[in-house]
Length: 204
Image 1 (cartoon, rainbow, N blue to C red):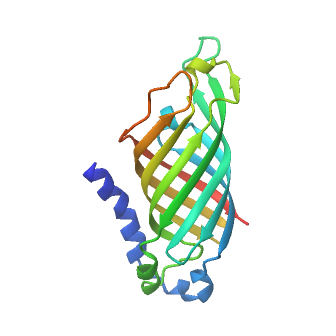
Image 2 (image 1 turned 90 degrees about the vertical axis):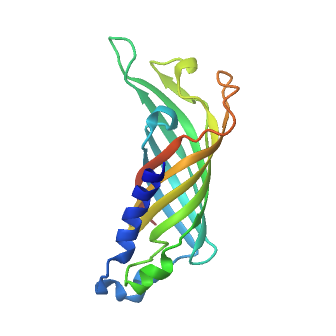
């Protein structure tokens, strides 16, 4: 676990330390109060998180260092071990996230002439998410599909805005989860499983 955390910090430190004078323009330090995005998220661990998520993202800035980010959308789960005549099995789920973020590198980035536009930089976060039980199934039964759950995570991440283009990467650990399916009624409690992903998006 220590190696994973060190690995997660390394790119953040690298991004924060690089000096680049061309970002000295004041527009590269602006942080909007209300930030709207459309995002496509690829989880790192699809076996229990889903394969792909399409969501709308609203981030409210309390100040330059603290924000509350929410996402709502649809998640897909794809399994490749179905019947021999059709290996792919699909389930679709509603998905939502509320994430409290602390951007610890903002001051250092400004000193190094790195952009902080709309909270560009490294952060710590507490995330609460929920994935519903399947709302649609293709070549799959509900008992074998990804189960609905509510999960709480501690994350380390990095995000960046390039004009209207947005990227984000994060890695975390699960602190708590509650199963929502009748087929998994006893999955609540401390878990410790890894959580992560990458996303791209457009800023409105």
